[in-house]
Length: 270
View 1 (cartoon, rainbow, N blue to C red):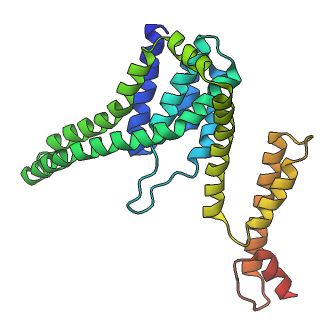
View 2: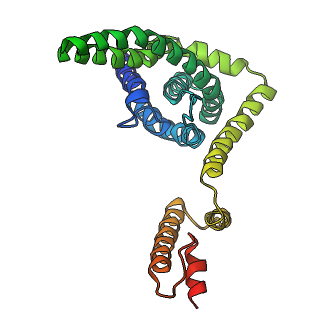
View 3: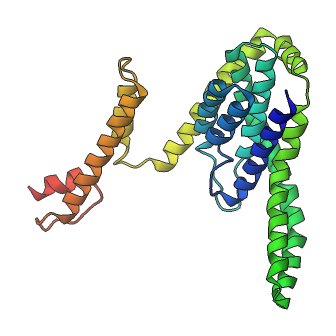
């Protein structure tokens, strides 16, 4: 891996670490981080494939109350780097992507430990900024704000840089040394991780009004002649139809109340 490639990967990792806190441009999401690392390393297609699988898993990760979600930034960046190292060592694409997906979960848990360290270090920074606010020093507040955000970026950039300097033949040897039962198990586990992430999203969104759309989409996805673009068009059309019926049901003049079920509201009017 060339120096320019390593530098670009570290920059992507730094942005992903900052976005884990800022959450503005979504660099920490697998769909962005893995794709960018695949782009700068010359493995764009494989990066997109890995990004799509990991994004389904990360969709269900959310901070709820005091519970902190797994670290998507470290999981995305480290998995993508492992994929690049394996591909540079001429390992089979399917095997490398499956392994990268499987190691994403433990990497995301390890990222929680790094997050805890950074947030602990941020406590005295907050006190320094409070002192600056008492003195009316906006410059002090801004400087320490930049330092705190940069610390979050280094939380991902430093492990990424260390991984980049691991020889590709070491990763290739480790992948080839895995027994068949372990590699097959990681392949199955990688597929299940994506399915579990998507199931978590469905569990949060599920209502009696949305379940019929899920069932319809599940059936349509089984039709081999339909492409992803076709399924996307059908999904958009169904969403527009639902919104139109919901507005019609809420504004109809039959004296019925809007119950949240647009089809039921319209039928009740008749």
